[in-house]
Image (cartoon, rainbow, N blue to C red):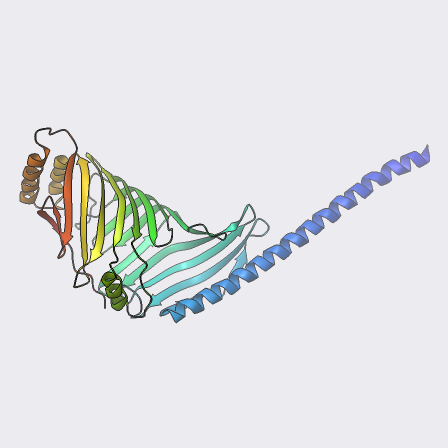
Length: 335
């Protein structure tokens, strides 16, 4: 009887020891994988920074710190900053963040997340200071080769013209292409307020007809790309903004002075009401809105409520809708 009781006491003890040994082995294995992943990310950051410097960028950051154990491997780079010289476009481009965090989670071990932390600052030659902030922003790289994806929520940009808010921004970057969707966009009106109503949704699908050729000087690369017949093909653009619901397709290229030139066609409803709203906000002159509405009335006849197909052109810095000049843009400065 005593021997049976002794065996019953020993068996749970061995089970507990076995469980403790398995837990210790799991902790050691997890710590080893975490350390190796952090080491690999730290080497990858150093290699990427060296490659960026060879392309004309100056990259700097503070001493990396590791975190995330036991569920992820994370590397935080404080005081991250990058600036470009004459080899980048636009000239003098700079970007900085309070910190940048890289993470590999055990549940998604093939996805590297890059997250800027805190307020970001952006600048370029001829461009006033711009600050960016978001409740969450990340760029996801699939280590198996799928296109990178970007996502941001509650994005706020402080521009020289005022504050720009974007509720949700999502983008995918296939080779030489972009697919982006923005929702809840509040544009600055240049007078300390925001244009009303906010833009409900803007979506874009675009790709380059041919890759941009390699080179050092951005203007030379752009000229070579243009001379080879390069253009941006806008396979789909859509906009929902108050009464306006528009979709379109078109192309964007560079003219002889390396300025943007676009040809597009949009099909839209709600254009007259949108022109009235823009005139009330001061975005366009009331006389321009009235003239544009007269042109639209001609295009819409004899079915005023039906969608209107309108040609859109951008040339010499002037955006024209139905051949009517609507907005003027400043020229691109390549150096």
